[in-house]
Image 1 (tube, rainbow, N blue to C red):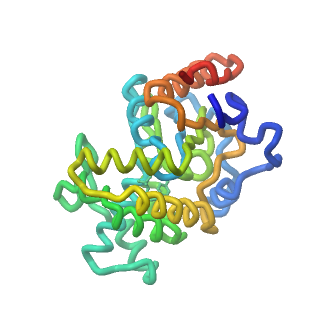
Image 2: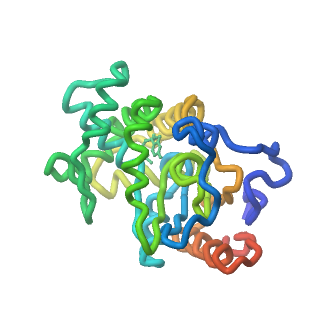
Image 3: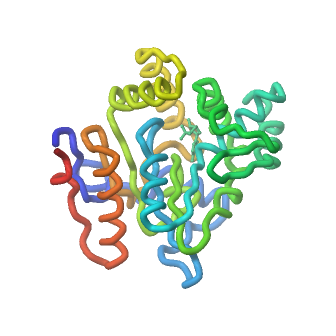
Length: 273
Ligand code: DC
């Protein structure tokens, strides 16, 4: 496979500047006033697999499939930011009023089952529009909003385990996750996937607009001062541009098995067709 990073290696492998901790991990310490939890907490703490990455990298689908395979819970943290954005739209709030947006985030009446519900209304599709995604990215840059959603996200951590996807799962929300994956794909591959997704839902979309939008969103998510989109220092990077969903899921499960058994982590190179 071309374009594959030094696979099976931590993100800080040779070729990357060595970091003591990522910006997100420093934020975790600031938010909580204490260092991130030590890896492998007490015996009753549910294990976590953190899957972070840019928009449309496929992390939502991969997280769901990994959770299904393991019989674990799943957290789509982006949905919480999208729900906050939708609540803002409905009340005419914008990122220019951080206190109001944080209040809305902290008091979201949400329910997750096969669908996603806000104030008793099914909003599974409503939160997936580009307009909601763009506002989600803007409100997600507000520290007040991230603080308001922190404990809500951690409450999803239950036995037998949790697969959590987002931008800062491995750096801020679950810094002690047993396995951290940073899932990437080229902007073109991601725009194409998003395009197919929208078309299959009967929503018309222009691939150039989608590409521009996701590049702008990546830039905003990666450059914000709080919990930016960045791999944890101990994350394993997986480029899914040339992988099927099945291959991506299998690689994450393989890494999980290896981590749990204390075996060396392997390379996903041979997975690519
Ligand atoms: O993963 P997504 O596209 O559904 O996320 C929507 C927005 O929410 C995304 O642009 C950035 C923000 N987000 C975040 O800041 N932190 C997370 N853990 C998840 C999402």
